[in-house]
Amino acid sequence: MYSRNVSFKLKSKCSAEFTSILEGQIIPLLRRQKGFEDEISFISPERNAAVAISLWDNKDDAEAYSRKTYPEILRTLSGVIEGTPVVESFEVANSTSHQIAASAVN
Image (cartoon, rainbow, N blue to C red; front, side, top):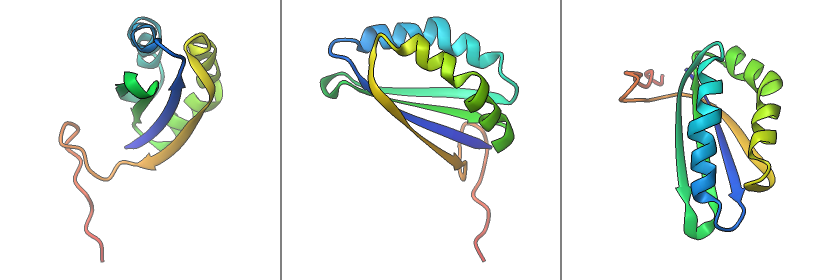
């Protein structure tokens, strides 16, 4: 499993609108993407910040989404975010909800 972690700087007082857009527009779009597994988001209204973590079957699916669909996501969020979000990618090492265990390190 593979993750894309995206950190956003939100415009002032836009936390509720960010959540609404995420639930109403972005998550339905993500569910139609090949290899999409899950979306987890975190918001800190007092810091005007948000983090969205999407989980994918594999790196290829996550990268295809990044090239083809992510630009559309940014356009959808343009009214509630400032600047360029920071995107980081990781292989998932552990997940209790997805029953993934860390592999042994030799």
